[in-house]
Amino acid sequence: MVPAVELLARARLLVAPELSAGLVRELERISGRVAEPLGGEPLGGQPLLCVGAALPGALRAAADRLLWFHSVNAGTDPLLAAGPWPAGALLTRTVGRMGERIAQYVLAWVLAECQAVPEFAAQHARAEWRRLPTELVAGRTALVYGTGRIGGAVAGLLRGCGVRTVGVARTARTGPPPPGSDRVIGADEDAGELAGARWVVAALPLTEATEGFFGADRFAAVRGATFVNVGRGATVDMGALEAALRGGGVRRAVLDVLAEEPAAPGDPVWRLPRTVITSHSAGITADEDVAADFAACWEAVAAGRRPELAVDTGRGY
Image (cartoon, rainbow, N blue to C red; front, side, top):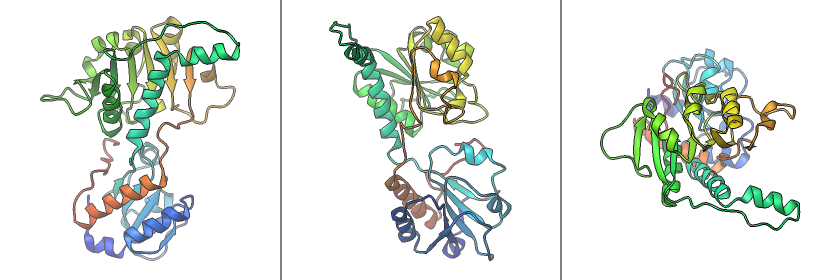
């Protein structure tokens, strides 16, 4: 639901205390009002516009006053998992240049693997001079799960290097594939593509439908692909991934996200074979991303339109 323009004009702007002073000033400029801290129970009866990462319980209780919550993150599953979303409240999210950043992260690991960068780094540490075979990426297949802004950016950058890119959506699509993908298939027809993929890239949001999505059946279909997860950790059954790594079906794994973060030093995930874990760093959101996306959403709402970055709270993305 899009907030009424007259209510938006009266709304108080509440911002999370962890936002930088520069970002808060930009949010004030865009909205034309002074920001107040988000956290305590709101006073008065004015409608509320909030910007942050988490929705305090007091605001969930004030559902009749919450007009709009803009998340500073792209993933809104923690917000939606914390409790029922207030009926009628608009939820928007920040994407910014995250797709570009995550696409470069994926490409960096793809190229590093093909150019034997990890092996050469290990040889350097041993002062060992030995030639190693390398691999061209062109003509190989990448299966990219998620065809939204992030998955599309990943597919587009890989395709620019000659990689055949197959997007995986909830259901198969008719007509021409979106820019960046050679084709798009439905999630229920991925077995054949999994068998022929060189890379399997997970860029899925976390919903009821995607929790544990990459399980034993899917990993059993993999024939030597490298698995890269830049979506959500809980979309992966880690026991099934470990079995596939130890059995050789999965060649390597690059995991930027885990179900439980941060992983403690004693967590078994650090001991997975041929696996690199990065600290949820592939698509760190910058202040300019938040400001730009909030401004675009503000322009749409002020004109009575549903923003492109609005979240379907029933679907979770």
